[in-house]
Length: 415
Image (cartoon, rainbow, N blue to C red):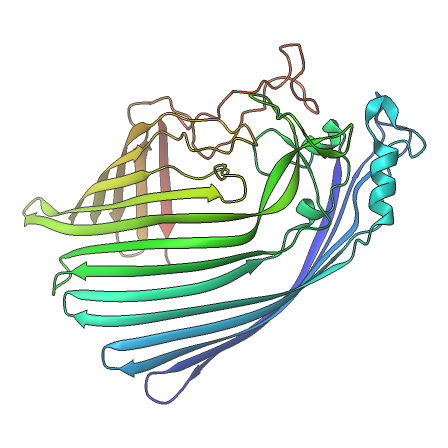
């Protein structure tokens, strides 16, 4: 499989100091992306010609933005931003390995003809806007209120892969779940509206800090997927369960909400150094509101807590990582569940005026665990096929393990 691409980009940013402490930030951006993805003939159904997966793919982005930071009062700061982006996409006509046949049920003639007859040119006008209002309530509390509207146009591999043939579809998987994916020329941009508030509690001398951020995001035209039947070129009437399958990208609606928590506190200071505790906690729930399904590849509740020590040029830490069980998964993708786990890491650092040495041990006790966002392991056996009856092909249900005990060292020289 051969791919050739290039990106040409131009960016210009300006930061203008206004009266008082206000700032105006302006910018523009231009990006031109070109992609060809073609597969030379190699026998065994894959011949006599080249398979054009994405032919003359184009994705151009032109954007301008402005952001204003305004000090309303001694204890109030407002940040307002707006961005407009035009995304233009197109692709050329395609063909299968043999443009004259639907060899072995691959439906290449049908799929290529439908794709070539369709309007492949699209242009999206996307508006983004943000507003953050920061309040200094007292010397022990700050609050930031935020609202944002963000838009994302789909990428070339979400729009233009045209073949429903299983072998071709699985070559277009960039999400790591082992399934095959078919593009959708009708995909609309995702539009997300987020509201959040951050409470920053701290001591007057900042010896301790605690930040809490609850948030909620509603996504219109969320790009998810549905199971697709290549033989009928339509959604599957009976879902495939506990196996890899072919899916097609579609727009649906989604909602995400959660909370991020972080903090640190100085515990003690003695001849052995300064000891402190710091940590983070993240919890998030995501749901496809169109189908009621879970959202793919979401991290379950997880936390990191570190006991740190600083003495002279030494900066050391004992870190505990805890991750909850993942059972809120995407059923349409047959996403794998993962068990909860805990890891212990050791970190050491020694700094001099121009030299810094870092070393440590990750996963000290060599714990075996599965990565919650690792997707499916498809490295065993041959490729370009799913759910075969023989064992030397990728098998559904195999998780991607996390790294075992790992030692590392790094040297940084500053001059």
